[in-house]
Image 1: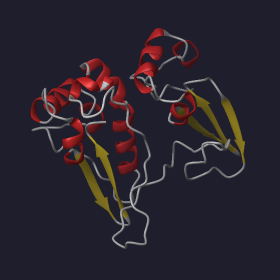
Image 2 (image 1 turned 30 degrees about the horizontal axis):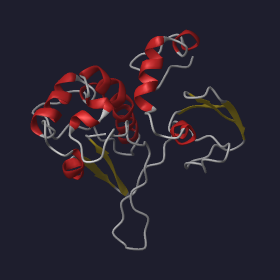
Image 3 (image 1 turned 90 degrees about the horizontal axis):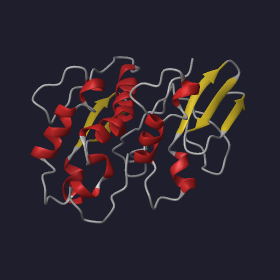
Length: 214
């Protein structure tokens, strides 16, 4: 039984997708000024089924079926190939200059409304509610990937004093307030501090990182 991957709870998929709650969450993810075709590529949801997979686009309602071995890497935006939600590709960090570096799994959750702005320029930072709606999926992905390692890693937030249950903590109001009060208070240019707000976890063969701004 499908559940929405964008919202906190999406019970009853057929009724939830056309509902106001899902629409508001979708508006936070697909911001003004971003071409619809580009925004749509970050709004697919996938399900693996025997013999292939199914994907649904939350922006334009496309439904596509894939028969055969499931792809394990992101497709060309022009291609009609699904990427499974699980297992997910793990971004690798290598030391050789000839090796591939970070691979983006999820795009930023919102686009700033002006360059070199403070937190007020970012739609998902306008309230705890919008922050929670935007950051729930990144938190879920971090826990899913780290939990599927041969030796699972149980992540903890490194900018808050305490963090119990990373998947629930990251989108929560406590983490949101900590982020604004310690790092993104009014007047601080977000672009200047964004690179200081990565958290990374190393494991054999690579690493995973998340940016707490977006």
